[in-house]
Image (cartoon, rainbow over all chains, first blue to last red; front, side, top):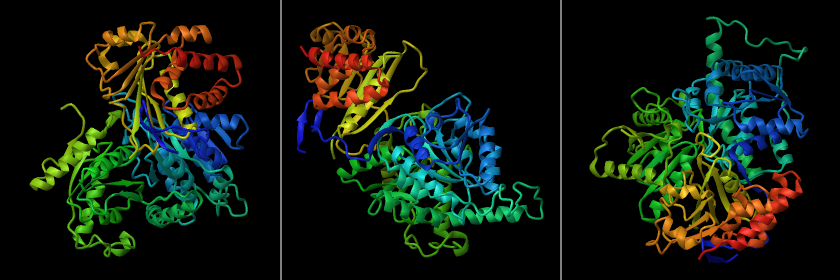
Length: 433
Length: 195
């Protein structure tokens, strides 16, 4: 169709043909609920009011309308929601729940039980601020607080990636080498409540992709009786934790394998991270979630002005693809890592701390092959100078981050490169000081 | 890169600014555009000023910030023009569409935009249209019709066709509501006055 000048701007006037098949407009929450309907888990347990999101509200209407055969268990708290999900998963069911913010915080104790019991639960997490002060808006403090609970974490830039991540998460969690729970993170309100376009798959394609779940062992298998969650003192607890660490290491290739399979059914390609216009970049930002979309917009804009800038957006935060990420950043002059949560260590936010640790490990060149995955010690980062890194904490409690903020970050990086002066390493973006 | 048309809706809690933004986004998506529609979630109180936003483009939209420099501003409640926020950041060559019985020339003066010849000001009595067609003074759907007229965002026939489908889903077969809202949209499309 030809472009025409309309009163609103340069635009393609639309004929009767309309949207391509498969492309829909949904909120992030609707997209995730749709993925859950297509997956049709055996059990969904959820606490049905705030701080829950409308993911489970939509899902409950699929149950009520008979569109899924899922057993929907309403419980009295988020602690109970995760407990019921753990019980269902231990019994051999494919079990899911969803949560957000303080709800995730209340699940705390049981998150560790899910992971320590090696239960392949999938849970969308709508990232929102933790109280106090009371705030319901986008913030990554909730999921970042759970980063050491041995849950795999997949992060989503938009409704499309959230939908795609939820479907892939089922296969990752249930893979026999992994058997760990997976959180799929999406930004509160900015993605969860905003309507946007995405391409969705036919129900049968999703059902075929996730397949049916038949665990090797479960509580309800009388032929092979097992115990879940017994007392495990200094005689074996450590070995079980060591196996959990091994499962997290094993998850990395599984996540890539599942992404490759997913590409064949969806045409959409996902890596551990998205390196956008990074090959010949001098400076770049590293950022999770929806702000990566805004960064992408600004990268394109600055590139048109001849500035060599790029973006690295992690999709997988647990396990952390540190050395691969360090390889991708090697050779750049300066990098800003943006964190939508503060660790209050005074040394920067969690994404910054881990990125810098990975760069250091790459720099000292003593990465142990067994400890660090197949690419360690031989990656393209070796021999290339590593970038100066600075940290920006941004967007806490839903504070907007707009293209102007992103431009300011790139300007700061340009100054760092020009003057060789790093200045403050930890910075706060868009805040009143 | 294709242009992104950004719309900012100003309303009061209960007037349906959020619904207008989401419905317009859905309609434009059905018509083949890439869209975003999202409200600003503050304390949700009946009558309190609220904002909602749209983005439209031929290309996928990756921006996820608030709309700070809209090319189109739709004002659902004329009392909101006392707040200079309605003209804040509006792009050169942009347009304002205001729900009011006041003619566009007067509205331009009240908005303090006499010097901004580049901006277009259009008015439509959307609340009265809504009362006449739907039986309630909820101006959001007629304002959609006015915005379509002023922006040329979608071909009108196609807009009506997809909106009818969406309204039927939204009102779950309550035909009088679907018909009333469509009537309101068509009336506002016809009556909006650019002076």
